[in-house]
Length: 159
Image 1 (tube, rainbow, N blue to C red):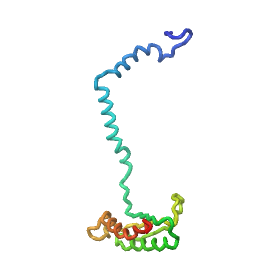
Image 2: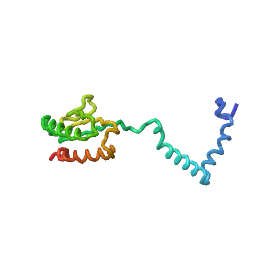
Image 3: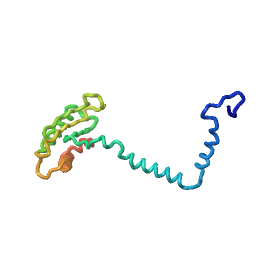
Image 4: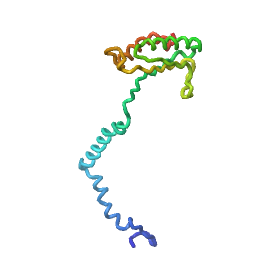
């Protein structure tokens, strides 16, 4: 049967396994740089390739819409917040590339955010790019719109 404690039966995988496993710990303690270098190369390869893992399933998210969120002072009243939301909506609607503007003032209907009257959200679908002004890009349009919305920055700072 095999050596062991008196009366103990060794399993099939235990019989004669110790001599075969003896060289492995010795090789792991070897001072040559090969095992460490190989492990380093494997780790580097995993890190480089892991960055892109799964990206082939994710398309670039560009739906042709703008979603703008305005945060006003937490102490703003419903009436005053509504005045600002209406003014911001008019500024966004003045951009020729914007098809229409839909706004929501206050807490979202789905309960995903604990916002109050200080929250304003604006959905602005854009016209097809063929109908935009000549030479206009989304980055340029967004930059120009942000500049115009800076007039409301004092609202966000509570001034």
